[in-house]
Length: 535
Image (cartoon, rainbow, N blue to C red):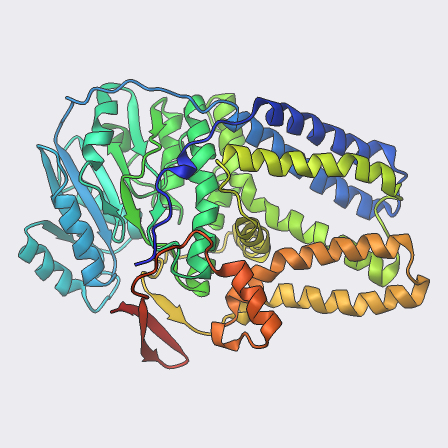
């Protein structure tokens, strides 16, 4: 078996005060130079550039604020052991995956807990819904099969709340297998009578399975590492939908899980904070789940997260809601505004292309002055991310985050137009297929760059402006390449150079001692095939 990704490294970091101050200063200086020291070029492009720089500065400042201190220490009483109902949400996942989770939940070292499968397979018309009931009987856990649809996962949880009665509820997704000490390590914090929920990390045990799982995990490391740890200081822990414990009283007070959003967990956490309850993120891996194993599942998951988060801005009017403190509003806005970055990435990527085609620029740049400011700005930014993430920050994570811009733009348009989006469960088995169409915007960008380069060279030759904008566009293409490669089937990557590039980008350098490689069994499904692990 491949070595598992570290369960501790991403949770331990000691941010450098020097880098925090340096990046804070350079972010402000860089914005000032761009906004005020260079003569304007095209006015429309100038204000597009400034909008992008305002957004980047906002992201930098809120990140620095969040990770400034990571030493929050709440009180805990390990003898506190009230009754707990454990919910495992199920909607057509493979029976063996659900059974593994249920058995682990049943075996948790805790004196007073019951385990229930929340079986939504019947209302979702899944073929294996009855198999779930049979499995629950066989292993000795409860099974609540919903008969009336509505509210997706949130409705499933709310239905179970009506037929169970423990004062505390644990929620696991079907693939998130708890450690035996999950309850022992979380329940003691509820001696704080105003603590509503405890969230623990979503750890992907299959991170080294392939390019998609690895990139998905490396993105999670930054969020579940310094970001979630930092939010504790502001009572703004994000509710993430699995691997969490909730006080029933707090959930009842907000009418149960929010059924109006596909990000039911995030929005429910917001409502609970509005009521004055406290929250806590516990930086310990206490359950192990599965990352999306194919490109289609990854993009669907990203869209669901983006759309749900953007609803907080456009549907729930975050900044004007009562009950949240100012800093809680900033924390929530910082989280959801990440999904606006798709617009900013597209704007910034378009600027060099517009120059190549039309010779227009947002500012007339003194290259030396820009370099004097930009170089220390980018290096302090990279250094800060590396320091705060305990050196887990990776190019792959940046690539997938930036390259998801088109997903974020689609989610933004969906939120702005109020289009109804149904909740979809992330597939727990890989789906083979050619998903290059999902990287079409990135391939179009490369085509525009090549065509525009010829136009720019014909117009003014190898000028400094052409060199600067070619370098800018080439950087964007370099960032997009891992994402594009991930969309292409491995067998379609041909040629020595292309295969070598693929290896550099995706072979997990942290994988060692692969004793027995995982074999893949492909079950035909027309154009696509479900990939199952075998031995």
